[in-house]
Every structure is written in C-alpha cells, then in structure tokens.
Image (cartoon, rainbow, N blue to C red):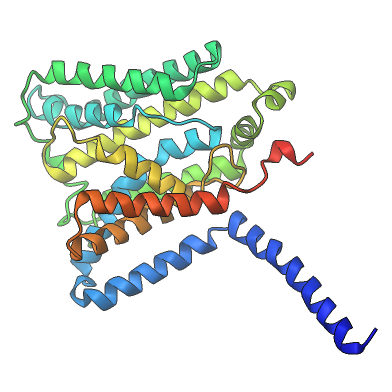
Length: 339
C-alpha cells in the first residue's frame, strides 16, 4: 500500500470521527443558537443601525424577557415529554388579575399576583394529576382546560377590558423604569433571577434529575422509585404558575389587556423552547436554551417587521426554523434506545 493511499484513508477516518463529534457538541451545547443570535444581531445592526441605542436595546430585552417568562413552564413540560396548550388561558387569567382585580376591584398587586399563581398553579397541578392517573395525553387535557379557563375569565370580566394594571405593576415592565438606578425595567432582572433559579433546580438538585429521568423514560423512572405522579403534578403546576405570572407582566407592559392577549404566546413560546434546542424528553433541554430561543425570535421578529413582512409570512419563517431545528435535534437517538 502506497504512502498516499494510507494518508487518504487516515484522513477519511478522521473525518468520519469528526462528524459525529461536531454533531454531539451541537446537540449537547447551545453553540448553534449562540451563533445564530450573533448573526441576527449583526444583520439587525447593518440593516437598521439606529436601533442599537440604549432605549431600543432595552425594549428588545423587555420583549424577549416576557416571551422567555411565558415559555418558562413550557420548557419544563417539554423536558417531561408533554405539551401545555393551556398557556393562553393562564396568560389571559393573569392579565385579568393584573388589570381588573387591581384596577377595578381594588386588590393589592401582591395579592393579585399570589392569587394568580395559586389559581393557575392549582389548575396545572390538576392537569398533571389527571394526565398521570388516567394516562391521558396532555395535549387533550390542556387544550380543554385552557378553553374552559379562557371562558371563565371572560365571564368574570363581563366584557370590561377598560381597566389598567396598578401603577406599581406597570412600573415593573415600563421602558422608563429603573432597577437599582440602572436604566432597565425590573422585569428583565426578575426573569434572569428566575432563569438562574431554574438552572440550579435542573442541574444541581435531585428533583431536577428526577424530572429529566421521568422525561427520558417514564417506566424506568418509576422502577427506580421516582414518584412520577408528583413530578407530573409539580411540573404542570409550575407551567401554569409561570404562564399566569407572565400574563400579569404582559398586561403591565401593555397597560391593559384583551381577550386574545395570550394567543400569540402559545406558538411563540413553544417556538422559543424548540428553537433553543429543547426537544420532548431530551436530557439536554434547559432554560438557558429557551432564553437564547426567545432572544433569537425577538431579533428575528424585529427583522421581519422592518422588512414589511406580514404576520402570515412571519409564521412561515418561524415554522421553517422550527423544522430545521427539529431535524437537527430530533434525529438524536433517544436515551431509552441506547442500551
């Protein structure tokens, strides 16, 4: 065998080993998402140079924070292997509590937030228990429960959408607000702190490892004495609580609410989770990925709007991106099939 032939074979063998290694890095770390985010930021800077001023950047971060908060609970549900379609109902109820309960009924903002978390978290816990106890797909239960919660909220509102959130709530999501003297609204810091807490929970606690184990293989988790029923109840309770809290801040940001205020966040929230690279039952899912996904979608939406594309065209773009991401991460051999 000639020396050149040997070199070619060694090169081909190295390339075959390099391919799976690169793919493994892309799957395990959000490298691709970070690169896409940098490319979009550069594109936005070149196409609209004037947008990169403190006020505009703060506005982009604020919008991304609201999206990331709305997708926080969905991230946990997707890691579990499910899907929560009740998100719009939770957001609508939270917006109702922020506007009508504080503006019309006179409840204190903290009490309105507490009631929102209790009601939405309680409904989510019930959904988790039903799905686990009767082996029903979350897709069906959350869709029906979300519709019922939406109808109940509209009944309570009685057609009154004129109320506005309390001033203290609006100050948390106002572009003119400051945080410890710094020129950005407190909601950005709140989302970052919640993100850090969620990262610690998923990566540094036994409960987080049990969540991943339940999502990877439900039956195997049960055989290792993980109480999967509690995992399902708590995950869906957290999903409802986070979405309801997001509704409070979304209403505070918009200084009002409407009966469709939560609808855009079902698709965009799920898109943020999937674009971030968290796939159903994945051991590599994390809220860090969702934050990157929310930033990517926010920059992409800004680019789409600046180019005059319609809502239908933007949804096409989002759909293509989701398919591309799923084609990369969804083809990874599931953990339960590796042994």
